[in-house]
Length: 116
Image (tube, rainbow, N blue to C red; front, side, top):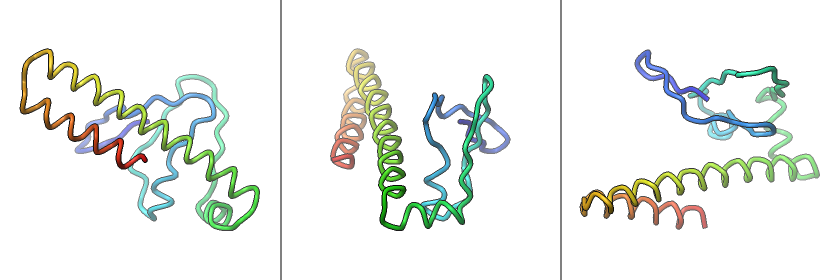
């Protein structure tokens, strides 16, 4: 996935088979903030908002499967963020930068509480 800000593109994620993207903007009723490029041949499923909302909001087996898929995606993103914060904390500790270490540790523990 690519985020663009001030005419600068930045890679924010590499997704694999079965992974979802773009759903947060639909859930929050916002414009898409990222785009994506396929490195190889791919089959994509695009769900228009008019079909996504009823499938997500109504009770039933389709909604349950959709909820589980989105939760898996969100938990994967949270785990990746925690791994990156852990790596940054380790780097800060090895460089003996106490203030930066405390700030990163607070961010990491905030993620653990938010994900619980």
